[in-house]
Length: 119
Image 1 (cartoon, rainbow, N blue to C red):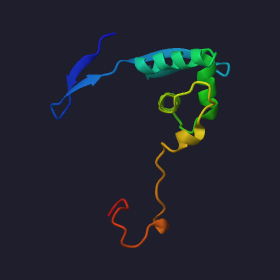
Image 2 (image 1 turned 90 degrees about the horizontal axis):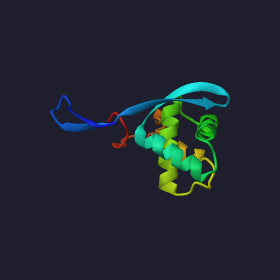
Image 3 (image 1 turned 45 degrees about the vertical axis):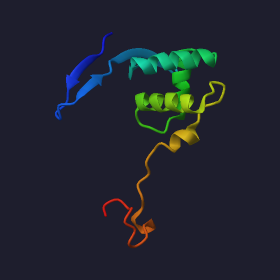
Image 4 (image 1 turned 180 degrees about the horizontal axis):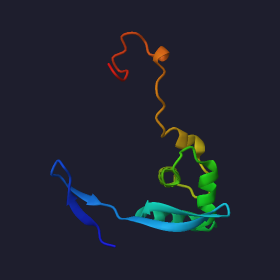
């Protein structure tokens, strides 16, 4: 599948990644997942390295995800896998947690802290 070039509102040349929608079985239930081809290729490579089917790996990601969206959870898992470099390790949910931005509670901001959002 060829990538297409398009122009954004700002007139900047951008590459559009093709999204591939595939059906898979997640813990016994058929579902469809939309990911860029590079992520599907990574899921295939990681699952092979771990001795799993792609459905088994996606089911594991689904059971351990912190995100509402399965596609996002898969992308974060792939990112975590390649950043930490081992297919033998279990899911890194604690590391994935660090990618989520937690809103700062207003009472925790120090008065006069100019780095706080909204100031």
